[in-house]
Image 1: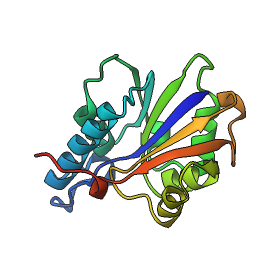
Image 2: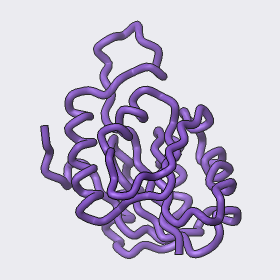
Image 3: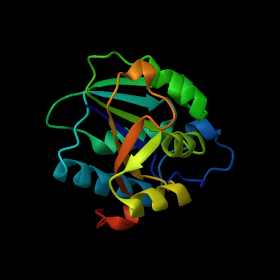
Length: 173
């Protein structure tokens, strides 16, 4: 069984309207939410082997807030993840090495939300599935169990284990 963790970047700042979207940093609230998600991931022993992260500034800063993990994962920033569609994200996942047991993908909506909705074959919690269907907020984390190989992962090919939103967590400054 493989583990797929989908994390939407934390809340970004809009303080500089002249800044290109790709270069927007995290807001103070985003940094707090990412730190809270780090604590939740550590408590749940969610430590990926590989991290695929969009090359945008806000996704890279979200990743920085999660570090370090007990075991150091292979980290690969990818331009292809920036504003990728669900179809493009499936393509990336289908090319993950079969030796990878736990993968964290840090990306953007709407593609990440569409991917998460498409993946759900069954859910351990109907409430989590409903919450995920409604929205995938910034700094939210969806954990999936993937029974088959990465190369064949497609719609309905995973089980939602849990869905955690920042509002579910105590925030840390």
